[in-house]
Image 1 (cartoon, helix red, strand yellow):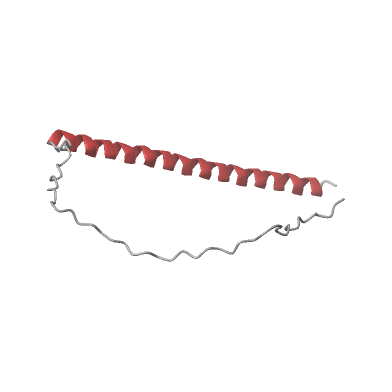
Image 2 (tube, one colour):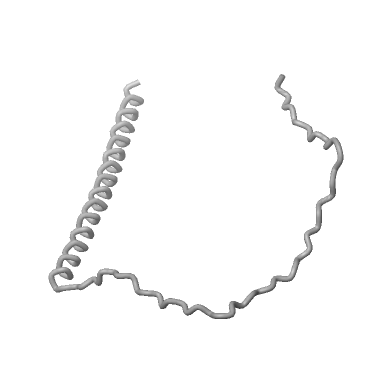
Length: 106
């Protein structure tokens, strides 16, 4: 019941044809009698970005705000980890003290 059953590969039946060999053929390129001129590619109409002093100030202010927010989040996470570690250490000291005092009273 717990022995795995490995499927066997069935043997092919009937006629088996060998694979055919494809030989490369020569490629002939035809040149047109009258070449057609290619149209020059036109540049896509893209709006140009103009950096005015107001835009630069806004970009710098936005970047500074992002840096301050990310920094505040990271500092608060670090502070949370430090407070949690200190709390666990204090709890361990209290539990050890309680267990030591319980052993002395026996």
